[in-house]
Image (tube, rainbow, N blue to C red; front, side, top):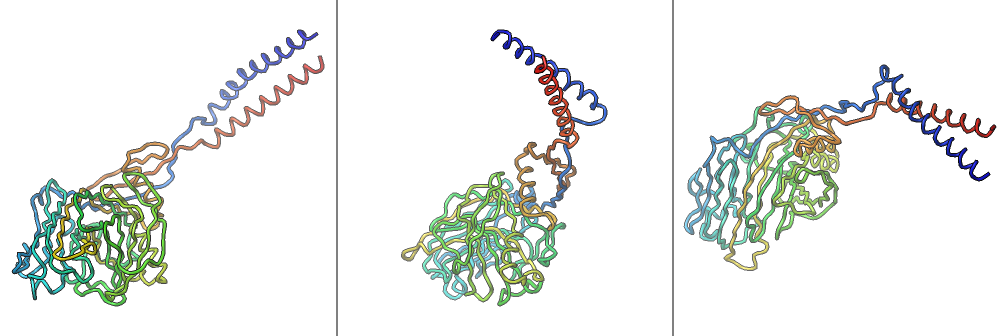
Length: 412
């Protein structure tokens, strides 16, 4: 009796398997001419990036340099002579400037109190190399003697305006695109203290001939800090997505506020240091955060200039004279401009895919390239609903067949 039961169960199992093998291909064959059952690519979104390249420069600027120095008796600029501590030099779509601003009028009235040393910025192999070595005799008023920087747009104080054709500053905040900023610095030495910082001046009007004053804003993003502290007091904390070496990460930024210089100065300080990384962040997102805090005041104001560089800190100097040894290079610097309607996360994810060259699960197809524009189609692989319906129908028919077989066996 036991053997007979085992044989009957085995027969049912064999018949079920055979039916499965026969029915599924049959159903697939029936629908193959009507319903596509192969996964396909569908366009999910179209994002156009207009790119402004700053570093590396073209070969035209190879060997270009800018220097300021003090020799104990005078302080001079390679551009404007003596006495001067600025040396702005054009390098294509931007200006580089040693910008040793922190000694205020001392470089003119009593240069020996400044000390001796020099800062030189040079274009070598297309990148910016910075060498700043000093022995200073006096503490700068704000604890920051210099901001060695690369400037785009219309910096205040009457600076020359340098723009690319596809991105003209000053520009009203409400009219601005989504500005992805890409930077790749490389730190060699940062004594006694430095940061890597990006900032913009945002003015009530589009006049860059004047100095910042009450009602104007300075918004800085600090990616690296050593032996320094942002101006003002910490007032908030935000988590903002950025790209680090091709990967999107959620980065915490501490927000500081200072009004001691007359204008309103906000600093977003990253809680993670990035000194030798390719970092991309959505600067527009930081402007939006401040605009929300300020009740929408910034919408009708003007973005004047976009600047990246290193502030030198002297708060770690325990006595004077104090030695400064700051050396670094800027290997990559650009803006990737997306439509303002594109969300921060969407823009960063699309740009990260371009940087990584990844094709799955999301593929980026570059459909057109010019010196300033990259149009990308963002695609994702999906299973068509028709394919799902086909599978469901097959399973239902198979279930009915199996139920019928079992019922027939029970009657026997």
